[in-house]
Image (cartoon, rainbow, N blue to C red; front, top):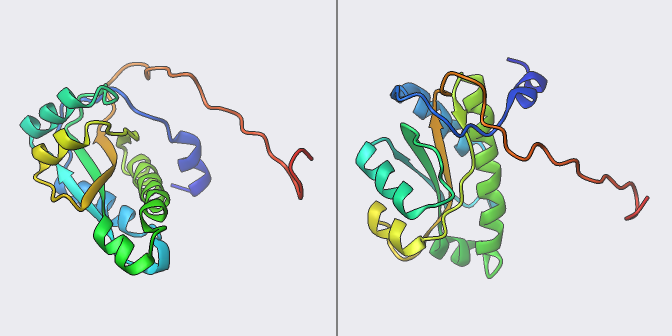
Length: 172
């Protein structure tokens, strides 16, 4: 699929078919995430693949933003210790930008593979740490539900915002 077509077809999927996502497709999504940049090329980003329905259910219970019931989740993590040691005080902020880039790669790769996905944030950091067995120095930046879109019309959100574009100076 051409990039322009992939961009046009990308949308946030909030309803999934119950079919499991094949391991090879999950590996392709992880590979897409790994192609995203990191500050100074430091490997502080990690990806955790969750396809155990019990763990997905537990995460849904503590994450009100995750409306979907996906067959899999990709969790984008940052090793904060490494980010600070190798990048400096801006490491935790840089890593958030980098996690967004990894997430967008996953969303575009999902479209290319016939899958649906979306970004979801996590506010219950303590709870997800316990569920996923994360050490204290690892932060969850994004939850990305992944699966085959459910049949039927897509769930409509608020639509795509139209951003103001400026040239050379703000307001022009």
